[in-house]
Each structure stands twice: as structure tokens, then as C-alpha cells.
Image (cartoon, rainbow, N blue to C red):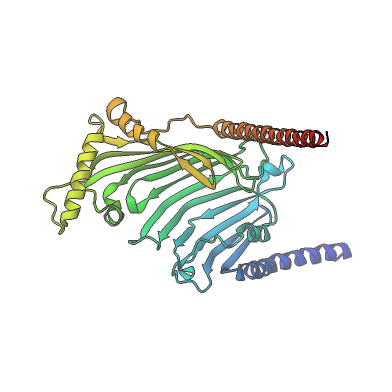
Length: 396
């Protein structure tokens, strides 16, 4: 056997051995990275590397809170695929994409630190960069589950999304670089605990600390009877039948936002004369008054109660206008019924207009301050001249 052939065979054998050992070393590195993430810890069962695709898969990723009282892990993903985004590489950009299959994420909100599980105290992007040092340009969730549990409210308020599908594209702005909101986002899911569905679509700029965005959010046909535990606790009434759908549009630019929420109920019934659940006298009259109010404010033709709640302000201080909300109820009842759809009249230009209005207001405020300071300086000069004049008169 020739020496050259021996060298080639040796290189091939070394590459095969390296390929066989690589998953072991990568697995050790990943688990070491996930072992200590502040108040959380993580573990991966196995790793599969595909060199030709420039990808690797994580099997059975689990992240749980250390010393937490929540039984469910904060995050569980049976399979995660991390790979190079080849279509962007052909455009001269080295970025990656991540796909999570059947993930489960469990949020819990509580005043007790041990029972609070939100992940807010961890910089997840830092650990994600350690696992995948190449910037992520696409992130997708396939058939996921999201569980939100509020332990603060009594009774507990649980909101779960099943069959959750979501995708974020062009995160690193590889395409449409001159576009104000270059990253499209879509998400959908079934609101299992309350019936109905959730749909979300948006365009965002995710390269900012606080992203700019323009979104549409819809919750469709939530069953009012599913809300009875909360309705009994906070309103001393319950629903007999009906659905509620919620439509919202929002545009935000540089933390300044403009939008609305439009709740719309269909076939809502609160009061029932022969209700056999040991209803108290107080609840009887509360439900009776609420039903009368509903009948008065209901659009009889469409059997619906609805309004439009405008939202304005900043991300730190969202303001709602009372009178437009009240007028919205009356308009739906007696003038024109709201439609079960988006108004499609909110764009990022509205948030930009708000920014311009704020700039003008601040400019006018500074202008007023300058006028006041000039007037104050002028008054001081006149006072000094009067004093000097009085001193000269005394000397005479």
C-alpha cells in the first residue's frame, strides 16, 4: 500500500472517530452551559449532529426552576433543531434558524418567589448565543403548548394555549433592510380552557431593545360560562350562555403606542329565574340588574354588546379614554353594530404621529419656558434700573 493511500485512510479514520466523539463533547458542553442559569437549571438527554446540513438537534431539553414549588418544568422541548439558514448564506449572510417541535412552556404568576415561574430574571438570549453563536434569523414553534397560571388571583386564573404554531422571520434583517418593520410574526392556537381560538400577526423591528411593532390580535368565540369562576369572585354573577370575541390592533414606535381593544359578546345571558345553585339574594339582584343593563345596551338585531376601547400613551403608561368607550357601547346598541373583524385603521404611522405630536408639545413647552425666563430676566433688569435710578435721586 502506497504511503499516500495510508495517509488518506488515516485522515478518514480520524474524521470518522472525530464524528463519533463530537456529539459526546457537544452534549457535555450544552449540559454544562444549561446547568446553572441563575435561578434555573437545564439538561439535554441526547444530541444528534448533521455536519452536511450544518445543524444539530437537542433531544428532551428540560429547564426547571431551582428550589421552585411548580411541579411542571418551565420549559420542555422534545426536539429542537438548530441549523444554518442556507438561503441567507447564499445572500452572503451567516445566520441560523431554530425550530422547536411540540414545546411546552409553563408560566406561573405569584407573590411567592418560590411559586413564581416567569423566567424574567434570566437573560435567555445570552444562553441561546452560547448554544448557537450564530445570530438567529428565523425562529419557529410547531404544535406547542403554553400554560399561564395566575396564583395571585383567587380563584386561580388559568389560560392555556394548545396546538400553538408560531414563526418569526427575518429577525436579523437579512431581507428588506430599508423596511421600518422588517420581521413578520405569525402565531395561532386553541384556547383550550375557555374554548375558542387565538390568532396573532405582526410586523416588528426586533433589533431594538424595545421592539417597534404593528400587530393584530384576535381571540374568537371564548365561552362566557368558562369565565364563571372569575365572574363570581369579582362581579358576584355568572353567565348562563354566550361567547365573547376580542379584537385588538396596536402600533408602537420608540415606546409610543396607539391602538384599541374591541370586545364583542354574542348571545350573552346572565340572569336566569330558575337557577338551582344556592344563589344568594345579593347575587340574584346583581344578575338581574346586569341582565337589564345588558338588554338596554344590546344591539337587538345582532344580539351583541360591544364597544371600542382606545389605547394611547407609552409602554410604561397606557391610557384609556372613558367617554369614547361609553359612546362605543351606545353606538353599537343604537346606531351601528360593530363588526366581528379588525377596523384596519391603526398603522405604525399613528404611533409616529403621536411621536410628532409629543415633539411639538415639548417644543411648545420649551418655547414657553424660554419666554418665561426672558420675562423674568427683563423684570430683574427693570428692577435693577429702578434701584439705580432711586439711588441717583437720593444722591441729588
